[in-house]
Amino acid sequence: MTGNINLQLGWPSTSLFPAAQLLEGASSVLSSQKKTALSLIYGPDAGYEPLRRSIAKWLTSIYGRGSELSLDRVCVTGGASQNLDNVLARFTEPGGYTRNIWMVEPCYFLACPIFTDNGFQGMMKGVPEDDEGLDIAFLRKGLEQSNKNAGSDAPTRKTGDKYQQLYRHIIYCVPTFSNPSAKTMSLTRRQELVRLAREFDALVVTDDVYDVLRWPAEKIANYEKLGDVPPRIVDVDRTLDGGPKDEWGNAMSNGSFSKIIAPGVRVGWAEATPAFTLALSQVGATRSGGCPAHIAASFVHEMLESGSLEKHLQMQVLPTFRTRYYAMLQAIDDYLVPLGMHISTGKPYNESSGLTNGASNGHKEPVAQAGGYFIWLLLPTELAGKGATLAAKGLERYDLKFAYGDMMQVQGEPASTERAAKGYGNGIRLSWAWHTKDEIVEGIKRLAALVGEARNEVQP
Ligand SMILES: Cc1ncc(COP(=O)(O)O)c(C=O)c1O
View 1: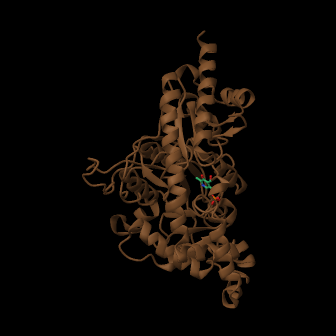
View 2: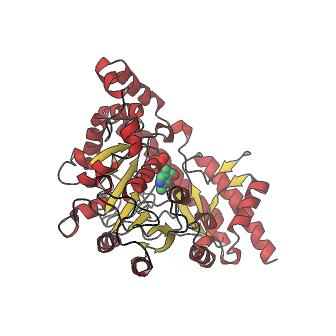
């Protein structure tokens, strides 16, 4: 097999795009005078109401909330990236009341420029993670230190009715099937994080964009169903110790259709307390231009309402990703493990009721879940610190691309660079989202050739 193999790309294969279902949605909207009138006008601040309703219903079914999620907790966004920008615009005062952005390390590196654009250059801090998620003790120490530093105790520029709520800190993470580390935060860690956020006037912003893409971590024939999706941090904040600290709460969930329909639809949603959601939906650009992605939102609503999204997920997306994931695992075992590489994706989440696959295959315990788009591997110790060199050689000699740990540093934080050198810089991230199963296996073989060659160079 020849040609470029890009295991860095966190994009879904174009063959998975549900174009026919979107077309059906589009026809349904554009052939109806009533729907057209609703969807081709400036969108309401909180977004296309039928979509907000169908998202609320869908999230209720996914996260098993007990009661139906109320509409006023949800607003439509232009995707997780765009909404992060809005959150910062509305709820932070960089260089004033808001002290720092705390990012789980290795971090989703494309979030760094969003923070920088919003005035947080030099204020982003990394928080290491272990097998259960971010290091709470480390974060607590950092928050305490940050609050001792000179800074404003009250907002100075963002004042008045428009900014009724600003947060002192932002904690940004991807708690489930993280990008890049593929780790899933344990329930205890989620609870500790919410308590810490309440104590330090922090907002936890989570990109929950991979939650529904999940399957058993080990290949099992004939499984019936998985246990619960790990609760989002926003669910924990909603329910823990009697509920949110105040009407604003300390968590906001960023959902997106990018990974489950297609990135080009640019539709996502936010969930938080009603007060937070309302204020978020009132950012200046939305007040002027209406809710982003309005027409696309109406197509997505049709897909949710007709059940075609769920069907697409169950029949196309999940089987495809699952199969590729198992093929990747097998290839890693066959070709990379013998070279001293190993998978490092933390403790799999199995705190829910788990896989209820009965006695037929002997699995009675909850079965660990895997999912998302990525796997994280550690290079052999003798190649520590060589991720960037390897990636460059991979492209040049093997036409192979992959992401490496040093890319995932928190930008502008020297301590994050130091920690990369001592640990997570030794990781590489591979994705199964873009290539076919056979291409993935070929990519792993090329990686093995690259790593084998590099090992021979350091220990001839
Ligand atoms: C953690 C994370 N957040 C956000 C995004 C982008 O989301 P959206 O397309 O909804 O802006 C990605 C895509 O790779 C991601 O991995």
